[in-house]
Length: 338
Image 1: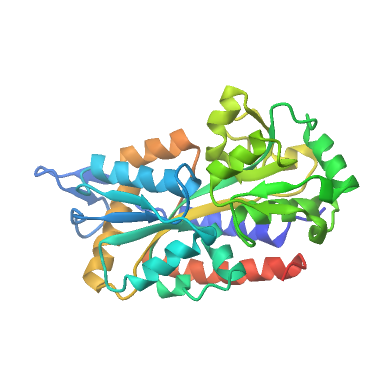
Image 2: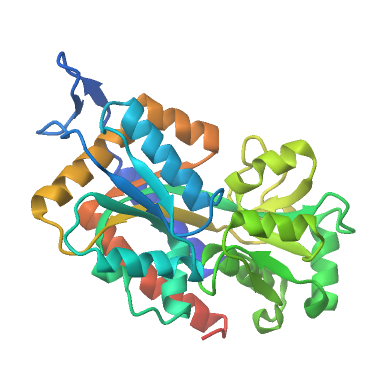
């Protein structure tokens, strides 16, 4: 069975991200942080706010709070306010960001989910209206069931799903076109199930999704691996598979491809700023996040969270966002969902 176009694109993206990775950072005698290989030190940020466009505990929320903590602990920023503006798969937050024109102290945590939601919700606010700062991480998805689910293996789940798709609802914390939606749609295609028959239920954030899984409202869920590690460790849920090409440290689950399903899929997250900020503010934000990328604090966070390093800064990230929008539209069309 051939690998999907989305999977191939993800692999290309990952390779490009590695090529663009920034160099390390060091502390100068006066405590300033500078990037090795950078011609100038990053200016310490002040009064920064980071908006999370969905609920507390979600993948975006975890990423934003990790960025905030590491910017501060590495001396790259003063106090940072992280706040949640949930709704409509991230497009409520996107609309707010677009309306904050010229405000160089505001970032929004985002990712593939917001790309998909802006497409499926026909949002008037577009990511192309924002100021891209950097792509940060990549993360595989997990196929998750409740601990007492009748589906003990991936084969159990797939057999029941193919026999009666409507009776096996799958949930995700993404709107149409987001990672949690694309994962079961691509999985359906990979196992020979018509994606149009998939009974997909959207939740606004990982917290709500896990509540639905534990409450047996779903046959299974697709979500970022970082959102299920604790529940899996406690035994509350079982992870039947991960969408990465290799096993994920800390999760007792094999990749789909090691279980006979030819599919690899990777989600990503990054940061964008408000429209029409000054070039000086844009440079300050890009420089700070570039410096963060090389810190030991951030490297430790990546390892602890199981996130893949996918750093792409500034103008390169802007080009990537444009290509992602086209890619999501193309995949939905290929699956017959647009």
